[in-house]
Image (tube, rainbow, N blue to C red):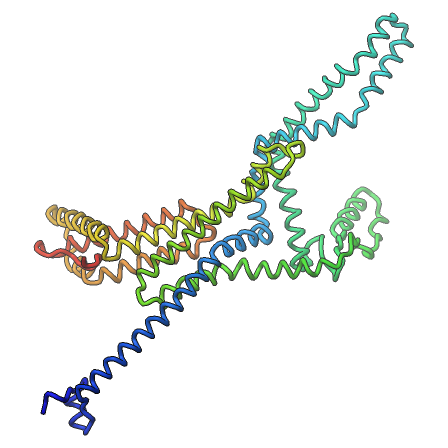
Length: 450
């Protein structure tokens, strides 16, 4: 009977070639096995996506810190940008002014100066009361000298020349250390085996040229030998260079690995949109954890620095200055994560998401039709945009994501700028699609059906 046999897909085609026709029990067993295989496949995808999600969350703060340390250690320009504000910070300036003033005054023997004055007055036949009174000038003289030195040091520290000298000295010192750690032999400071050497060749050449120009022609015979001086020898130099190479690898590839793990987690999950929402939320949580950790470390640092060694306001300024780029990168990633999570939610079937999409659709439709009534019609172009709207919106969003990935050190302002441009493109395309659609139709290309 036909009731106890069930045809498989393309059963007629299979029967024509002598294929076996499934019975009802065989078909039921086939469906059961198919469902079991599907469930196992989904469970495997969930497991892989979960592992990748956990890996992404663990790597996120590590990638941020590794990239920051790499930039500070290996990039001289970045390092100078980090320390440059310290020269203009009032708390740091006050410390430098006070310490330099004390150093200069301590090198001035005010007591000896007062004694010399007393001796000079006595030899010149000054009245005894004047001679005796001169011995009490040590205190006022020290106060006057301190005031004069303090004013002059303050003028120097707060001048543009000091800020330029600060940046220049930090740039030269950092570049020399980087060349030494990377094995670059182009600078004056270089590493040879386990020794650090200073190359005096450029200095010798300049001195020889100046002596010859001044008339000492025999100075041209100064030999080129012994142009290097060994500053010190250390067995840890090789370790430092190995650490520099490891830092270069981690700072460059750990962020890439984190991004790849996040993308693979979204791709492996059965529900891509939901996993995108979860992954973005997880990354956002880890950035908040890192920001909290930086705040805790700041408090610990300020509590451990003695106030007589470094005032609290100056210590806070130094800490905030050195970690500000790490904070900025973390906040930028937090904003990106929040925007991504919101986008994933708004594309979903939630009630609020459907209402917002409907509101946006009605707004763009009304704008497009208003343009059409004024004579601005997009015609075939608008209809083409309506048909291919989803592809265009995807390209616009993808272009924004690529711009942020390729942007070197993006800021929160840069993220907002890219987001604004993407939204402007989506709005303009939707309005153009509405302006080209018939009056009775509503464009559907750029919005997801509720």
